[in-house]
Image 1 (cartoon, rainbow, N blue to C red):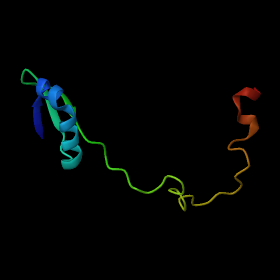
Image 2: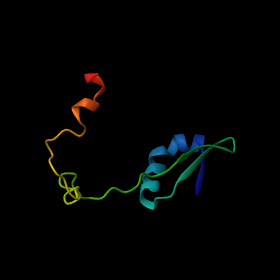
Image 3: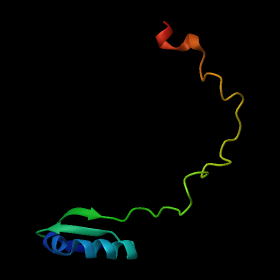
Length: 78
């Protein structure tokens, strides 16, 4: 894991972020030699579109328009 002083990070923050996004290595930010923060890259997202991403994931359903529970079980009916 890379380490960088807070003052250096402040001066070069965009460069550090760009480098981290390419090498995917977290960066520890220190203040007077003590770690104060860790900057880590987000997990890579698939390039698949969201629409249709769950297609085929429903195993079965009986009646999609029926209530999930009986109306007598609702607390508002009591």
